[in-house]
Amino acid sequence: MRIKLDKQSLCNAVATVNHAISSRTTMPILEGIKIKTTKEGVQFTCYDMTLGIETVILATVQEEGEAVVPGRLFYELTRKLPDDADVDMYFDKTSVEIVCAGSKTHIQTLPAEDFPMLPDIEENVQFNFSQEKIKNMIKRTLFAAAIDESRPVLTGVLFEIDSDSIRLISLDGYRMAISGKDIGEKENLVTAIVPSATLSEVGRLLENEGSVKISISQSHILFQTGNTRMISRLIEGEYIKYRQIIPMEWQTRFTMSSIALAQSIDRAATISSGSNNLVAFNIGSNQVNIDSENELGNVHEVITTQVEGKEIQIAFNARYISDILKNIESQDIVLSFTTNVSPCVITPAEDDDFLYLLLPVRIYTE
Image (cartoon, rainbow, N blue to C red):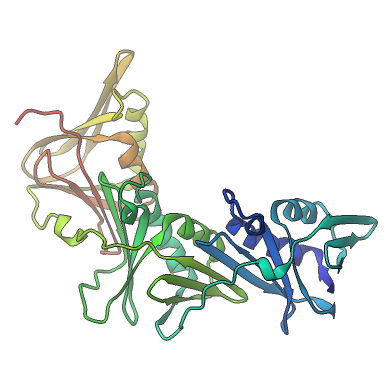
């Protein structure tokens, strides 16, 4: 195989697929990048048996072929090549010579026939959405997926898709994040639990313009933008019936600036007690008091706002509520409460494009 590529295009392609290189494997071939000539140019592929990323770039193909190069080494070498120069790559059966301006490097290769094939996905169940929309939805929900693998389904994000709508849901037992309009439990609803690691890479891949095609099979999901395809195994199992968790009524409610609340929580969190990083809310008729303390001191924050309903005292883990507020783009939010041991529901003041639910930390005696 003999190919000539633009250095920047090569670096971009390698950086794209590099995130699917296996970091823990007994199969050396999974630590590589497969390079293959195609009608469109040159195809680069990485696959760790859960996530596969494939992209094609334009190139001058002087001799067709395929080979596998050591992934992380190749990534480091290509990004350090001279700028504004073409890269010539000459492959034989066991190695490749990389020539760029005055630089020449030889590295060993592995046989391409040992590299596993990416799964085939029947594209009869596919949807097209705005890249910017999906990217924002991932950002709003990914942080609330569980890290603990004792309940594998919670380490992923639930996709609910119908013909023109999509909803993402994540929860870890302490908080829940929902992004997208409620599309109910329709008969034609397509659902899939996508691993968090996959969505992290999808969010990195997506841009703020153009569309992304999403195809779903029984065991895999495909995201495709332009000449790049990302295929991931889905998490098996039944997701929690999350709609049953959301309180339908409230006893106390108020609206406030998301930025003002985030700043108050940030200050209170600097002095908070225990492993739960407690911050306490004392909600009265026309103000919200936020308090925290430890052996070194205390913080007392007062936010004036009109409160509807009953007075309530309730406490939260400061980190959990801060994570939520960092991912809210709406200027004003509504916080709704039922009791001091029931979940708080956070929604935007002007639309229903997201919903967050946060469990309190029980400190008050009823």
